[in-house]
Length: 297
Image 1 (tube, rainbow, N blue to C red):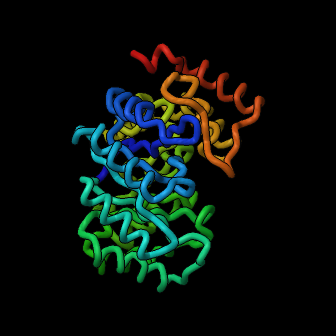
Image 2: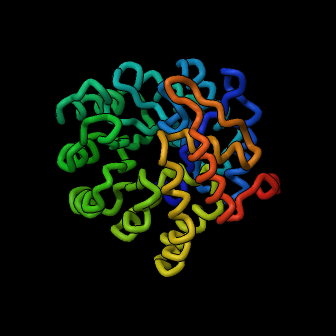
């Protein structure tokens, strides 16, 4: 089971190309700061604008840089089932501990269509599958009943990254699938409540910027020390808020650039964040004592 703070890694660019050196620096820093696991090429990793070759290279770089010190769950989702199978096969062969498969976006499949999508991946690739349920981006919402069917009928489906913003889902999914169903939050701001409802961890955007604090927060939750977790949540909430004042990963890339790890460059249709957002991010980094010097330690 995957537990704790898993960073939904950004993908650094330089002059339009992958910045491999910066990506390796980011992975090394994340592990040194106590991050429990890494998730490359998800939404925060700008997977929609990566070529297939780039996508696969980022997965390989992450696994190579991690060197088995923490698990890597590779983003491998697509609204094409064949493409998701191809990316999942690559991730497994590269050494990923699991794959993160988003519900098919834009196509708007039915519940049966979603089940058949995951069944096809399950049957083709023997690797743990984490369902990524994010209705706000994919437009479809996998029901608890369909998720339970996937878990009970498909041997490789082991859990969910839940970004529904519906905290009842955690308890409903525990009731339908039991405590062995691996529930990971997909939303930093409500991760405290998610964990209190029986969650096992968070695939976090904020941990790109504050990996130590996010790991300490998850450690407190997993130890049922919710007094400490609340104190850490109070420190982190401004960061959780400011990282989404513009489309992800704009603010988080700018924040990481301020830590001296990589540049803020993104690919169209995403554009650099506004001066107002930069000032807001800088203010929160200052409140948390996060600086380039800290990241270099």
